[in-house]
Every structure is written in structure tokens, then in C-alpha cells.
Image (tube, rainbow, N blue to C red):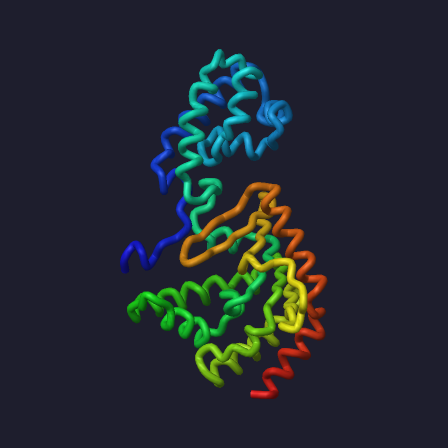
Length: 287
């Protein structure tokens, strides 16, 4: 299997070789903070960050933004030491193709640890809802073509991810599916029918809500494509998008807030879960 076939989201340090820079800055921040006699919580209050964020920066797994370095240099009496690193940090941020913390080592890991998962789907049924046959069709028809070994591995990995649906404590999951997904016969009539039955089965789970956005809806708050919203254990909500094979994990609070807002509007506009189930049953009966 080639690296291209198995590409996963790269972190800024992996993609741009900046691990050393952020690790060194983290060590300096910790040394200066401790020399000043401040706890992570106390220092965080002074610079506008929580103690978890301060800890992540000191460990080199979160980028210390230029404005933080400006404040920290003065608060910690660094004498310009931290300010000197700002040009390098800006350049690293400019080159970074994705901006998310280093603790994110693969979307599946983040997904498995989430206490809440919310998804908007407009092209295909979400991976956590797919049947083996549906998933196999998705991978076998993609371009460029994948070899059989890679297809089977990806199907197995996708099915393995679905364990999150049954783990305990159960995470809360919600989905907004465009109605077109109920009409698009991916894999042919039998595979399509099986997938609709799968949607009905999962929609009956206590921790899952599936809603359908009718195609007849005249206004739509999100024309920017599919996305996932996740609340990882011990971390704030993040958003995840993937366009043409290029993933992006969004952690900026304001960006995430806007996506959360759009998702809330979509849930209000979509059919309620019971009506969505009835529509899925109707589509299945028409096959």
C-alpha cells in the first residue's frame, strides 16, 4: 500500500517539519512560567487560555500563537526572548496545510473518544452508518482506482469504527442526511435496500437521531459541503471536513461556533426523527 493510498490528516509539525520549533518554545514557556512562580491556570488566566491549552503548548503539541507570545514575553519577563520567535511561528502557521493539535493522530482515534458526534451528509451515507456492501461499493468506485487489498482493508477499518455506536457509556450521535441519499442507489437495488434497512435499524437506537433534509427545501443554511462535529473526551467541540481527499480538523472556536450554528439551523429545518424514519420506510417500500 502506498503512502498516498493511506494518507491521513497531517499535523502541522509532520507536514512542515516544525516539531522542533514548537517543542523548544513549549519548554521555554514552561521554564519561564515556573521561574515566575505561576501555575498553568494562573498563567492561562493572564493570557486568555485554559490550563489544558497551556499544558498543550508547553508540551509542544499546540501552536503558541504570536499574540500569546507577545503577552507571555511581558508577563514572564522574558526580555524579548519569546518575541524573537514570532516571525518563525508566523511562517510555520502560513505553511501549515492543516491546523490542529498534535494529540490528533487520526480521525478514527478522535472519533472513538468522542462523547458526542454530529454529522451532515450530502453525497453519501456517513461511514458509521454504512453497510459492508455499501462501503465496498464506495471504495471500489472511487478514482483513482484502489487495489483489492486496499479496498478490503478500508472496508474492515470502516466497520471497525462502527463499534463507537455500541460502546458504553454511549456517545450521543445525530445525523442530518440530504433526502437525495435515500434515492441514490449506490451499489444497485439490493445494496441500496440493505442500506435503507440499516438506517432504520440504527435510527431506533436510544443514543442516535437521524433526520432527513427534504430535497424540496427552498432555503438551505449550508451549501459548503459535508462536515462532522465532535466533542472529544476532555476537549472542546471540533469540526472536521474533507474535500477531494484533503482533510481539515477545525479547532478555532469562532469557526467551530459558526458550523455548530449552521448545524442547529439544519436540524430545525429537517424532518423530525420519527418523520424521517417514516420517509425512509416509504423509500424502502417503493424499491
